[in-house]
Length: 236
Ligand code: TYD
Image: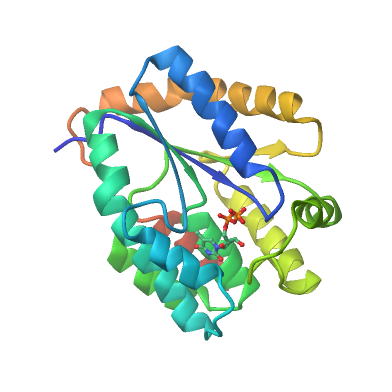
C-alpha cells in the first residue's frame, strides 16, 4: 500500500479558531482538487466509535494524566486505522484538527508527562507524520475571551491559566524545533485574513510536499514523530 495523499494538521490552543479555519481550508482545497478529494476530520473522536472517547475525554470525569494520555492515544489509533490511513492510501487530502502535537503540547508541556515516557509510547504507536502542520497562534487572553463568548467550557478548556500558558509555550517550542513541518500563522486578525494566510502557507509548502512524494514513489508513510521527541530528549 502507498500513501499518495497529503496529510495536513491544524493546531493551537483552545479558542484559536481551528474549526473555522479547517472548514475554510477544506472548502478551498475541495474547490481546487475536486469533489471527494478532501477528508476533514478532527481529534478527539473523529471516527466511528470515537464519539464515546470524546465524550469521556471532554466530560467531567476525573482522570490521572496517564489515563488521559492513553485515552487520547487510543482515540488516535482508531482514527488512523479507520479514517486517516485509508484516505491517504486512496490519495485524498486529509485535514485534521489536532493530532500528535496536541498530545505533546497538552499532555507533556501542560500536564508535565515526561518526553521520555511519551517517546516510548509514540514510537511504539508509529502514527503517520503530517506533511504540514499549521499552528494558529493567538495570545491566551484573546483565546479565552472567544471561548467565554462560545459558552460552557469543557474539562480541558476549564483548566487554570497556567496550564494554557504552558501549552502555548509547548506549541512555540514544537514550531521552533520543526520548522520544516510546522508553519505558524497569526490567528489574531479577522477570519478571512487568517484563512488567506493559511492558504498561502499551504501553497508555499505544496510544491515541496508533492515533489518529496514523487521522489519516493510507493514509500509507505509510517514514521513516528520521533524527530521532535529525540530533539527534546537530547536537550533534556
Ligand atoms: P477541541 O476539539 O479543540 O475542542 P473544541 O471542539 O471544544 O474546540 O479539543 C478538545 C480538547 O482536547 C482540547 O482542549 C485539547 C485537548 N487535547 C489534548 O489534551 N490532547 C490531545 O492529544 C488532543 C487531540 C486534544
